[in-house]
Length: 146
Image (cartoon, rainbow, N blue to C red; front, side, top):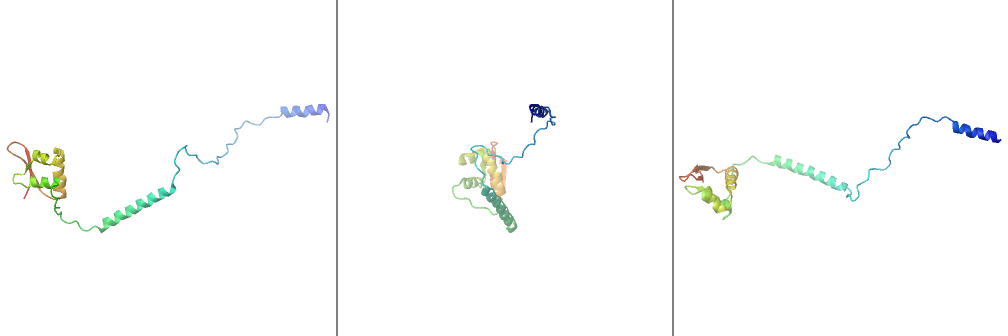
């Protein structure tokens, strides 16, 4: 090959047409998402255990619901001696009943707690009938109806 031929081949290589400019194809990532530094690793066994526990508790609840017998009439539960419940019941069983102030002094409860105890515990849970009225002084009194 002569010098002239060598220069021709290099010129032609330099002058050759360029192809269309296209972004290179993006390679798919072969790496999975990485954890944040210091993050605890997932314990797959825990998820399975909690799911099994939930299923078991639902089963037990279903069995309890189906095994319940017909509801009985509410039985009055005898409170422990010297408990606040027994103190309030003794006060309310008096012929004139007890005022809100007397119950509050004997139990150290606030008025809203006394009202809640009377409506929730005595009337709903124990099935007692509690009468409410005002005395001569205008104070609210409660007593258990006979």
